[in-house]
Image (cartoon, rainbow, N blue to C red):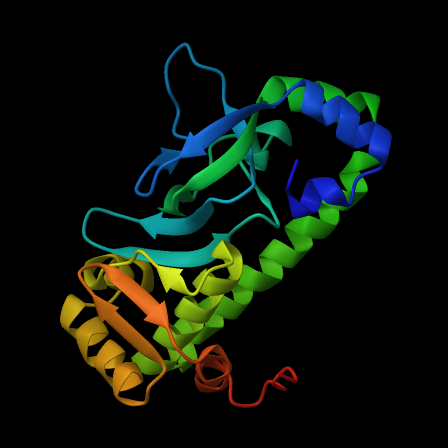
Length: 220
């Protein structure tokens, strides 16, 4: 299973987890973990797809996290937290390994050592959500867009992103015109190019610097 969380498990834990999982193809725009009558809740170990953690109401949307092949979606039902307070919307189509929540809960009861890896993942996810939430409060739209694009490229492992301005506006919780102006600024600086729903990152180090000028840049 090509998933970062699973890779950290002991070999026997990986083998037992594989037995309760099935491969699935996730499609951009698909919403995961929505309650469906007579259908058990599921857990998704992402292996190519990227999923945005969304806060939504009748008039507004805002992404507060983005999970790729390093993580998993749907642990709330497994850990007994009840109804999820976030919506999980697929941003980038791709593969995942899917298990029923009850099966994973039983496996964790039988092999409690797996909980340590899951706990570390959830703590890292909490820090990630906190970082994005702080960005909403303190950063301008250009900086926030640069960070989201950098994050999307990292999670999807590609610098060509199938994202429209409307989708980005929903993710950042702003008007479409604000995304158009911010994307135009990044394009003028030679950091990105875009047309017909496809966005190419031309200068990833430059985009990282725009997203966080104080972060040390990796050697090239």
